[in-house]
Length: 390
Image (cartoon, rainbow, N blue to C red; front, side, top):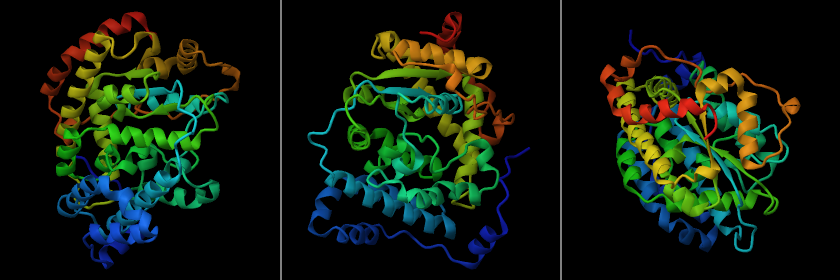
């Protein structure tokens, strides 16, 4: 049984059928945004021209955006460019450094969202909300416009919110901060852009993490702020992350890879359908097989070499999060010296990754895909002996 896209509301069908899609004019988007900031504009955009135009070309030639998707994408790119300039002109020098951040990492659909939601309820740590990671140079008056952007895929692709919800006041993945450097998997999740994928996998991610750090410095109150951050994308760049945040701690979530691949491919297929009528799910699975086979094997390398600091790393099994998330939270907080009072926490139902899509072949995921994860599975089997702690 093939994957079927989720239904669309009538207004979406009507809008897309009554309008012609157009190409994104990268030169116009860039120059008109720069002109809003006078003479200071060009200098701050110079070092993102390459990733910006690689992305623009991929969006025009590969993503097959529908009319609504094209309009949304142009607004999205303009927002990133404007916020980028405001971030860079907001003097970071002299601001308090980011100290002892905790990163929740692991493949998508492994329970990272559930843990993140619980950390968001603890008063003595800081998480980013949707609106402030989209508009870090603004205050909460942008809540409504941020809500409009974040809810767009859910309004267009019915049922997406049951797979993964988004809103302006919810805790937000920090990969959005890397999008200001135009080096981000956020673009890949939303669009079929294979040439941008190839470029991103070959590029140095340092400037993306420098941008990430600059935004956190802007948003935090002082050096006592302890950030808890979450995104699966950090799995691919742990050495760079540690170079930028040498005192970082990690919570690494784990789940059977084949369950992850089906679930994340279903999510990405539904998300891309918000922007294009031509989703190719059978290409999405192989991309994730390649990406996570490399990243999870690299994770084992980082653990065995000690690059991932054992004294600052807690490993968590997805099933443990489902069975007893409060005990998992207590283990993590104890490891990192974070005050924890389970009475204050509301156990939410957003167990990210608990959904299971039972037709992996819909996404080009064959039975032989598992052989690429044998080393990681061996690592997991040994890890399960010790339960949730490292």
